[in-house]
Amino acid sequence: MAVKITYASLSAPGEDVHRGYEQGLGKVRGTLGLVHPLLIGGKRREVRRTFPDVNPADTRQVLGHFALGSRQDVADAVLAAQQAFSEWSKVRWRERVVLMRRVADLFSERAFEFAALMTLEAGKTRFEALGDVSEAADFFRYYAQEMEEAGGFDPPLDRLSLNEETRSVLRPYGVWAVISPFNFPVALAAGMCAGALVGGNTVVLKPATDTPFSALRLVELLEAAGLPPGAVNLVTGSGDEVGAALVDSPEVAGLAFTGSREVGERIARQFNASRLRPYILEMGGKNPAVVTARADLGKAVEGIARSAFGASGQKCSACSRVYVDRRAYAEFAERLVERTKSLRVGDPSERDVFLGPLINGRAVATYEAAVSEARRDGRVLTGGEVLNEGTHAHGHFVAPTVVDRLPLDHRLMREELFVPFVAVAEVGSLEEALTWANRSEFGLTAGIFSEDANEVRAFFERIEAGVAYANRPGGATTGAWPGVNSFGGWKASGSSGRGAGGPYYIQQFLREQSQTRVT
Image 1 (cartoon, rainbow, N blue to C red):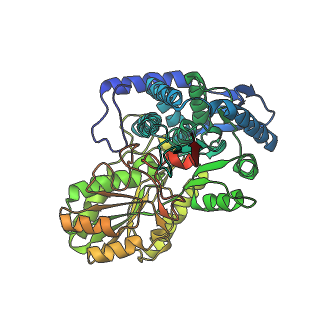
Image 2 (image 1 turned 45 degrees about the vertical axis):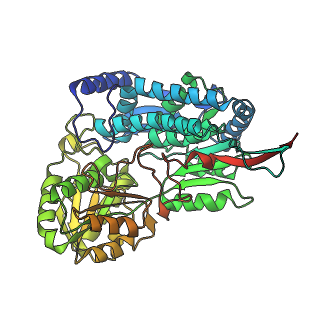
Image 3 (image 1 turned 180 degrees about the horizontal axis):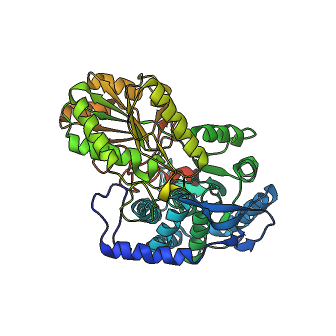
């Protein structure tokens, strides 16, 4: 794909992009309904137990049947990764960098097919899906660049005598477990795998059960690029069995996880129960946007609508609460409602659809519960409906929802929902807005809209979030990109304080060894 589409892109894709996507959709539809094995040590492993992968926009359509892995499968995958590590870790870093760039080029070449698959499997619109695969490619490119610019992380240190030489060398740990989420089924799995692989580690990947097909195609692409057998292994199945077996495995040297706070914190406790091992956890958010009296409301409405409702609100960076100066509140609320009503909900493969389905029935139940509370304790300005008639009859569709008049300490202002639901509140000042914005256990992303440089400066100085934006119509709180915006959370949103796609990320997959020799 010659044109790069990011989540913050404001221009519509050209006709050549639409044609390429539709061709990719046709190719993917010809591959549906098959049974897919595990990938362990470069070999396909058939198992007796399988689970269906269904289209959330039309649950009558089964995309494929995927292997339900066991604890023994996990043990075998970890062993295969250990055996591959002895070879992969000895590959010179410059050669690994060349291979990472080959992976990125393959992603770009196959972007339309990957995007089409994500539309069918994760319910992503073509815009969001094309962004996902472009981000995956750029993770590999950026981490290769970081390794290259650091000279393989092998700098000289000082010396105590003229005949002594010391170097600081970052070296791989071994096998990393990668547990990836459904909402960015290619980009986030790819980013975590790339961080581990570029430094010489090997990987066992366990994808979300809602999106195993995308993970399978990712691992097949890595194989096609030339990674040695066993460098990346795929075990699909449940979190209770496959995920738990990975966390429990004493041979796993490190773990990277993206998902909910509840699961991430449980993994952290379990993973280090017997001995200390490195882990990288990227978890949830309850991401605020602030709109001051000096805001450009056009930018604010567009940026908040895109952040709240892009990917149907199923982003850990989604804008879910907005604090608006009361002097701008009435006009802002009216314009946000108008913009929200203009967003089309439907089949995500259609070019003018902005919101596809939620991922599953549990997400719909979360949405219904939130709407019920909002009607009881506040006011629904627009939305609040499950869409289950006509073209929406067989999918998990809901209307994008804007609510207000909730108490500022209400549950819906504090807890992550992961649905297209944004709560708007009036405040009297920027000071009050920042106080409420920071009164959260989460600290992932945040945004402000103000044309006053002093207000923007105060926001950046005081906001407690790992990713902060000002005046961004492409996404008030969303749209981070490798090499452009480091993406990582503070407080309960992340464990490391070092963002994915940033200059400090890949070092987390490596450990330092000081090497001194006397001549």
